View 1 (cartoon, rainbow, N blue to C red):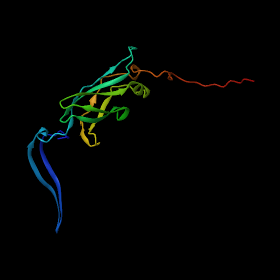
View 2: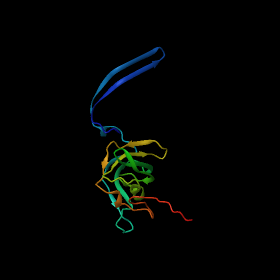
View 3: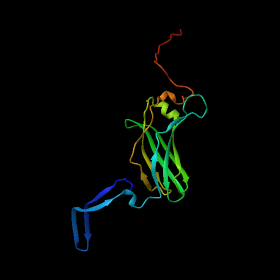
View 4: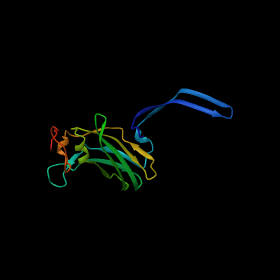
Amino acid sequence: REARFNGRYNLFSLYLFGAGIDEDKEYVYNTSSYTNTQFEDMDAVIIGALPGEGVDINSNSLYDYYSVPVAVSVKNTGNYTILAELQKNGYTISSFANTTRLVSGIPVVNLIFDGLEIRSKNIDGPYTITGIKVFDNLSNQLDNYPFKINTTSILHTQFEAPVVEFTGEFRDYGVDTD
């Protein structure tokens, strides 16, 4: 179910051993056709996500963070940890990790990527959200969302700047004080 594949499944390799049995078979069995939803669901599974948007909480026209809403199907109320990465061409711009209590149903969790961190990388979007994973309170991985989410085009300079940052070109020179 986690791979979200529909169709026929192939049991490729089977190894039996013990009490006088030592047998290895390949291309063992082809199943009937199934949809992935016919298999048992985990306690929490990501069912979808939107591209997200920059959020300006202090009204200075710069984004404080980038928020990506993710819908999670939750069978059992409990504490779950969600991880994700904001990337550009495989390079991680920012990471998200949060443990939160989710109630059964389909709650929406906002993945929050820090604007200062995004700006500090000096790389413009669009970005890709990847590696979205859900873990239970015992750190068992329940889901690994196989799809990438592309953000809208956005400049790194649209995010909150630190109190002090270097800009432009730099030069140095010596001063003789005697």
